[in-house]
Amino acid sequence: MHVQLDGVPSHHLPLLLAAYQYKFGRNVEAMCRHLIDDVAVGWDELGTDLFDDAPPALVAALTGGEHWPSRTLDHLITPDGSPPVRMSVTDDTPDEQDMQWGYVLHQQGIEVISLLNKDIGPVVSWDTDPRTAFNDHPAAWSSLGPAPTLRAPRGTQPRSAPAAAPAKAGTPRPATRR
Image (cartoon, rainbow, N blue to C red; front, side):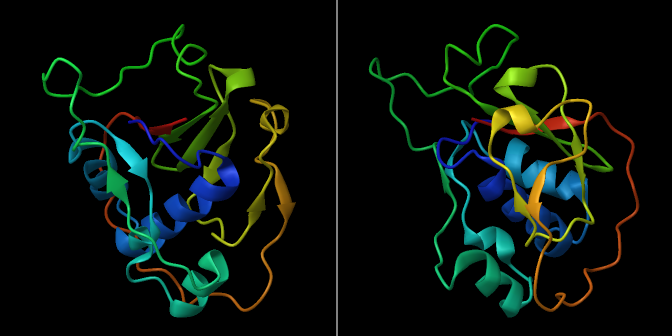
C-alpha cells in the first residue's frame, strides 16, 4: 500500500504503533484490513484519526495538539478517465517511484525497510512506546541491527493498551511504502 506523504520512520512508526495499540486493540489483522484492504488505491496521508481511543496525553505528546485526517488517493482520476489502480511494488520499482521506506506489518511488530536495505529491515516491536524518537537516516536501519532510536520516550507512560486480540495465522502484508 502506498502513502504519498511523510514516509519517514519518525512520522509513520508513532502513528502505526499507537494505531495498533489503541484504535485496533492490538489486532494486526484489523489494522491490515483498514490500511490495506479497505482502500482502492492508497493513502495520500496517514492522520491523527489513527489515534482514536489513545489517551489524550499520548495524542498531545505525539501531535503537539494538531489534528489532521487520513486521506486516501481513491478520488484520483486518471488522464484517460479509467479508474485508478493500486500501485504495485517489485524489486526494481522503488527507485523509479522514489520510494525510500517500506513498512511490513508482522504479528511481532513492524519491519522497517530502507531504500539502502531493500530486502529486509529491523522489526520494531508492537509494544514499543509510540513516543520513542526514531532515526530517519536510511543507513541507520541496518537489516542486522536493532531499530535505531534517537532517545527513549520521556514523560509519564500512557494507560496500558487494550488486551491483545487472539493471534490469527497469516502472511505478513506490506503496510506502507514511500
